[in-house]
Length: 455
Picture 1 (cartoon, rainbow, N blue to C red):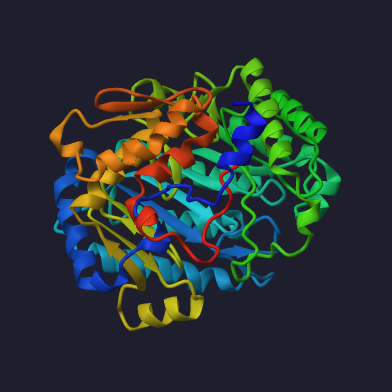
Picture 2 (picture 1 turned 90 degrees about the vertical axis):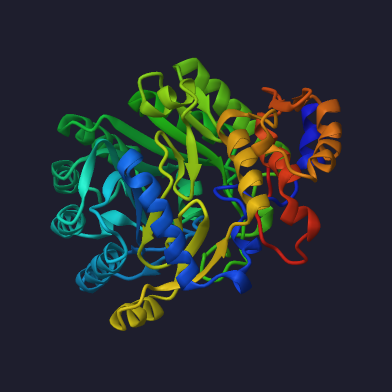
């Protein structure tokens, strides 16, 4: 089937599968804070000594609103908010520490947002030091943060380097001024060049750029120019992903342009294919879904060794069983359960003031969830999965295989006796392939907008 026909056929709303079950399908009736903490203690006891834990810290403040962003954020120019927020995060961390019988070993830490570099270098260093003084870093730790090219300073980079950070990612999106104006993210190439080169001068071993296709007013030539500028800086890894148009989400700002200003699905796919081609010519290898890396980057080595992992932070080079999310709206994962913090800053502060973990909702995974989660993780990280082992078999598997038959006829997958493998042609449609395994989605299709389009 021609590529355009495939796009028209498979361009439907679907999850990005940073978790399974996906957040809209969490069963909150069977969830409780007690069950969550019990599952985390169990996971911590099983894995802390062997592999350590991961920390995601959500820093929600931004000085201005980018209209492509669907993240939980608070827009303000008042930097007086920094101290109270960081004190709250450290208090939340201490409440988690009370659950454990030994010091956590931090294998992975990521500062996300929002705009982490909204915070001063001294405050960011104080936050990390406050966590590390009650834990210890794993020998093979990987600490990373998201930086805004316009406000990331040498002082930010040096402060975080001094406490163990060696990876930074910068949100580039697109270098065309018309596109930048539409998404309210004006940043010249010179700013990206400055922060990329400064990070390398200081000693960061992995510098990443985030690029988006499918943005308003974005044409093929804009993608080409952005990739050519990227080539000049050669970041170690790239996230090259589709703009998620979800204007129904409250407060995400995606109403600053009309739907007619967005590229068609066919043009979006051409943008992706052009970008992928240009990146391959420069030396990037496709890693999982929408991610690329040079052969010198840890993400590439992790893929080659079959160790690539995906969680609420996206693709990671290392895996931990337990991941704790700190900060407003942050999501945690114990393997056996998920939890999400309060999305409202006021509610987050109130619960911490009462010495309570600021958890708003969550999900306890049942046996079926755990099996499906393995398959979706395999597909997203390795483009293949198998049920040769009994622990990977589930009773509705024949129905899943039946749903996949048409994708096999379209050349997207190969179905074996007890396995499937995604073809190169099928990689852009891996979300659709995962949806065939998503039993909760199959049993109850959403009757309202929940997910962005898969293409």
